[in-house]
Image (cartoon, rainbow, N blue to C red; front, side, top):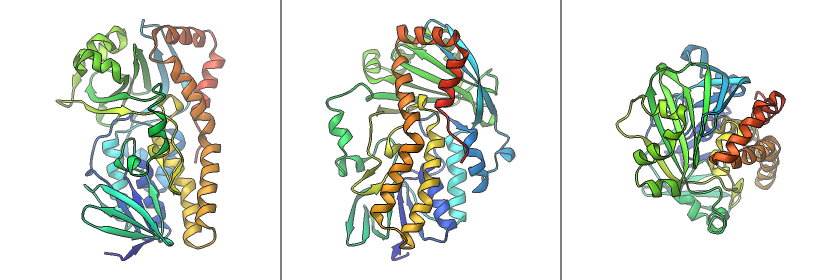
Length: 377
């Protein structure tokens, strides 16, 4: 075991894994701690925008060799079945988190990253210019530490993150339940669909092996009212004719993957001076673009900053300050636009009005789609 690591990354999602690979490529000793075991399923839509695939190819994930579905069309429907279709200018590819996370995990191991799985981090503290990261079994020491621990973590409470206190006052963007299925059935491989229902919306798209990813978000109060997922699906989702069709498709799993208390509130980009990455920096509403892509992109501009800090070219404070500014300039407008759009979704009246408006203005539709996608990185 290394006495002092150069980098410890808490969380092995897309942001944490891609950061670990890049830092290892630069020659640094990296430890990544993940509380689950690979390969694993995660609750999220499974679509990676085209802007990310050049980067994934550079670190050794060959999209062409994987023969993934290429998605370049969008379909959005209201609860009453009214819909719009549009082209996705940049588009993307469908791939499951089960496959993508595992490919990145194997690549990290290949690059020399030390990965510890099935391990929960209990606390983090800075002593002088070193960090101590505590787990049940060990205390690891590092020159730097990054938080990439996902949607919900005990570390949020450990750090006493401000958003937790603020959410007691404002519940508008919190307390969603996320549910994901893999399905077998008929769906064009080149389209991603977004279907609204009362209290939420559902994404549908093809992934590898001709499977369909069906992932939906619903207000937690609606699940409480319905008493079970099955009852909620019949009471709310099935009222949309498109979703009613997909609810009848064969399900690959006996039980869905689900997560409660999904929260889209604003989070700080660092906590206790520790840079946050991916969902730990602020859960990306699906309508902001592509959270999988954004997590990886953040790792790309964090990597050279971490490298400069470890080479003692910049201070920790300078590193975190530049990271904050870059994160805001890269994602700020997308998050703002996505949150505005999200307020229209999950409500029958506003969703119907929005789709009618967009159907009457192809220019506005293309503008909104463009504003929720980024540049190639």
